[in-house]
Image (cartoon, rainbow, N blue to C red):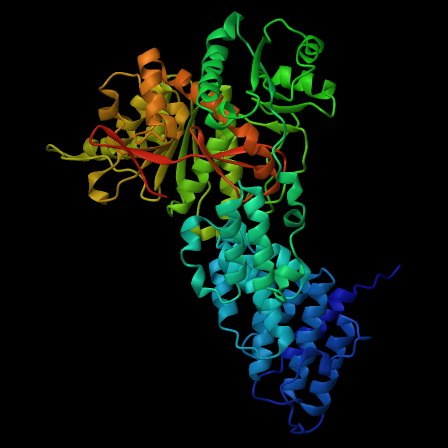
Length: 636
């Protein structure tokens, strides 16, 4: 039985067709000079032709007329058609054979667009390289310009340049409803620092203005309605007003819910009694400092229920009349309680249920989409959140080859996994040559920790080479071990005690001849402010994330003074849990606005808080560094 391979025939046809594309014309007949205008694809392409037929037509034109421009037009059409059919290998074959064969400027633009599409998922080519190629295209045809800017938008988004991505997408087609919605999404993902440079993007003034308006008045529903109405009058006929975001049309959702009766479910006895009491003290502190509640017609009533030994049914019965429930704390209690809640129960859990997954887009960025008005919102001091944010900080600072140090502890391994997933997403827009996979060091005790770090930095191998050279030397040999030159950051997921050991080992392992400091990054889980005073000397130059409550320039100095007087020398973990309780209470009147307007952030004691589309409270933590034995908070 004979089998036909059309794709092989296409490849052979193109090979034979282009084999004579030098200075010699086909021998079948003398080439006929024809004037071919720079035209759009549609003008020299028959829609009924298959890609293989286009290749055959190109061969026929070349053999009969010798016109390289018409031939190239058909081949470009064929390559584009192959790409549209999901056959990039065939399109790549044609593009490879067409290199150095394109003469007309418009065909060069089409060729470069084709290359940019083909390179879209090539790990050897980064987004910056594709953008450079796209920016060189000077196409005047509307279809080509639209494709150029659409491709640029994709690569800007991969690099996290959200305003540039939004502007490029709108330059592609600013009236397309999908483009308007995506541009609005990207503008809201831009950082405050990126917004400072927004004036250079010609398509974004209305988008940036709307975001700023929401940030200024998002927690004032009545004022926000008035401001939005005025905005719509000023920008009437603008695509963003024409395709108005749905959540901005339903601002009645922002009204505060009743919170006259608040039930708090915490472990107030048993092995977690100390933990539960620290959170309870934070909730009470926020309650007595809630001036708006104290001035209300009816002061909220707080009831505390001990979850230790209580069943889900018992907790539900106890909180039957509650407008809001805060808690439970333990994940197993959360999972047991949620299915039993009735629709009228509104709950802010102090952990995330097992099925809850953070909302991340294709490039790993949290998507800023409105949450549903679920009666269930989840607030947790999740270590994975800190690990993901640490990956973003390391990447933003230009680090591309980190070493990850993590103990065999389950918690530290979870944090390492979260970092690795986020790191892979962040580096997706880079060429393979522009970054390297993190080097992993896993340890079980102090000895394996030291050995693992020395091995990862290549110091151990350097010492072995020195010993080998010394064995051949007659006299005394002066030497100093050297470390790998590609390592530009060390990220540690360790306990506070182990962090004090890791930092000096790394500092001692970095060769001074390189003239480059390799910073060490950590999360709040690696820092304990109640350790010995010598710890800050051992942690010199350590960068770490932590909640504002325990950092210098505390945002609530009066409350801090009161707690210091009541609980002097309180351990750092309990201080963080106290702040957790304060923020849990203070979130209740703000949750509706935060869920419906994902741009909003509440500046709490545990960080800048927002609500994602999965109804999870997301914390953004400031970065600090230990310098001259003191902690200094770094600017964003």
